[in-house]
Image 1 (cartoon, one colour):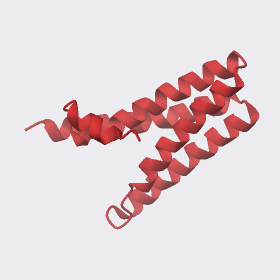
Image 2 (tube, one colour):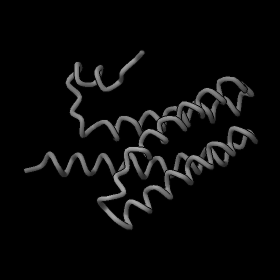
Image 3 (cartoon, helix red, strand yellow):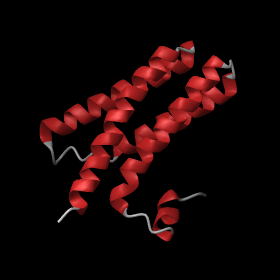
Image 4 (cartoon, helix red, strand yellow):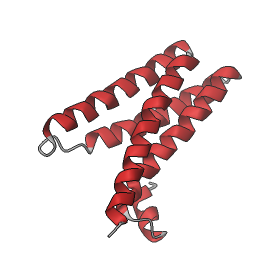
Amino acid sequence: MYNPYATSEMDGTPKEMYPVLAWRGILKLLAEAERAIAERRVEDRHRALMRAQNLVAILDNAVDMDHGGEAMQLVKASHHNILQLMVYANLSQDVGAVQKAREIAVLFEEMWSQAVTSRQQP
């Protein structure tokens, strides 16, 4: 079975980058799903959205509700929202739902990128 963490450690990717890389992957998958909808490639749309949903679910399961309080509740709610948009997009072939999901994913990718950058600065 493929273990992305082992691969990342072997290639020198710091663990702090994992969420950033996951959100970048989600963004790529959402772009792929959008193209697949436009080109009426049902299997490709489904595969891309399911993979993106799996990544969001993994990130959501990693949220530590014991630390962060209300902020973590907002993160969980945002994860839930993006998941609902992806499910809807998959069922209805709705490009608009994919675009809304991508807007949320962009915010998360930017947030995590900024967090990693600020941690690396002395």
